[in-house]
Image (cartoon, rainbow, N blue to C red; front, side, top):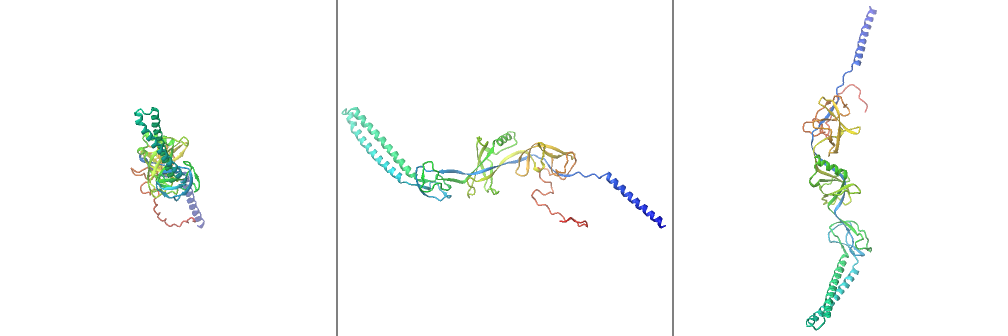
Length: 414
């Protein structure tokens, strides 16, 4: 009895083992189908995009003047504090005036002598005039007297001009500020011999407002011109862009400005076109020579298409995006890209049309020709790259995840 029961138990166990092995072989021979990967798409919808541009710029005073002496002489005195504000007409330097006073005195004496000679010649001509009319003197005597009067009158005018010049030179020994502004350091020390119109004494900069000088390349100019011609770019009237400055420390200057000048010439040395903006600077934060980045806004790209940069892939010699067709199958699409927008989007100039579904998230899981599951399409009217409803926008805080249920499975070591 015991032997037969043992044999029966062994048979049942063997049957269970054979059944289990058969089930394993069946499961290995017929694997379960994997669900299609889940992706997030952005529906392409053309809309007007702001056209912004950014360039390296340098600050300069709206008026910058080099102060040079008008007369030669010994620099006698400084009359200002270096780096301070000065008003137009304020005395900056004094040149030794003694030699110029002497020249003025000599010119005034020459004027007195010339005036006396003129008066004498005038009296002589006056005496001879009635005698000449009475035929009492010859024509030559009268002509000599008249010529003497004219020559001495010219000598008086020359002497007067010499006096005026001497007075001007004497006044030029007081070197004045031609404009109001802030001075640089004095470049010549007291006691130095300075030369008229040559020696640089200091510089004055008017820094409220300031000029922001920047340049763009010839190729950019051609691209802008063609884009405006075909209607894909619209610039502000007369090129008067709104301007913001980004300073060297990354901060943004508080006051906006306007572009007020664009050169018509291309610099043959650099191949660039110079432009200029003007910005108010009442606190003097901006100084001449300072570098910054100028941001231009006010242009528009009408009916443009833009998608997030992360959706654009590098292909062989081109750029590619992955789209989802009406059957839910992934299709690669070569595209032509343009400029960056203010955010993280890339302007697409060719290869996409309204209504196309571009894969934004899950690109790694998508395979061309394979089906995918769209997580949730953005609502109608949403801009390309906007996250679906229920998902936080980029930069927003993710909601806290719910704590996982406790299990008896061992947890990985931290």
